[in-house]
Image (cartoon, rainbow, N blue to C red; front, side, top):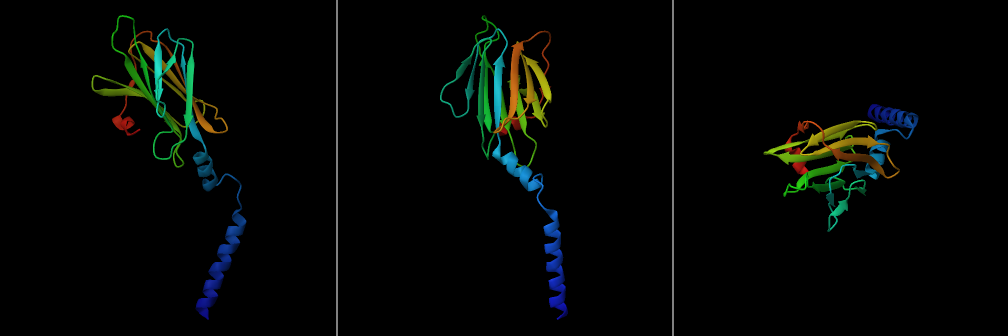
Length: 184
């Protein structure tokens, strides 16, 4: 009888507490559902004088981004970056090799959304990364190109980022970032 009374007390207390909790729409479960429902969108704006092209994962051909042009892509993936691309450009008409900047964006259900832009040079990976809230921005300059990456207000479907590319001026600057970027 004592066991039955104790079990009844625990069940009653649990029911009472759960009925008081309610759902304000901001519970961790609601936040994860919102994050899961949103993908990532990245727009690349070419405000430089350089000709460039971008190859988005999932597309068969690269798309040109002429000076003054832009190209955007969005996606949602559960096991890899939502959006991923390789951006190629020729730093000068006399330079025969095309250089590459890689970029990806990811909106995780359990972590802050993030976007990364990186390039490899002399065996190291250099780049920039944004994690967190709207308005956060960062920049890098490498091999005749400057990039400014900013998290802009979200759309209904996606976490949004804009990468604006301009001609470099002055010395290169970019953080050495770990090669974890290879995971995407």
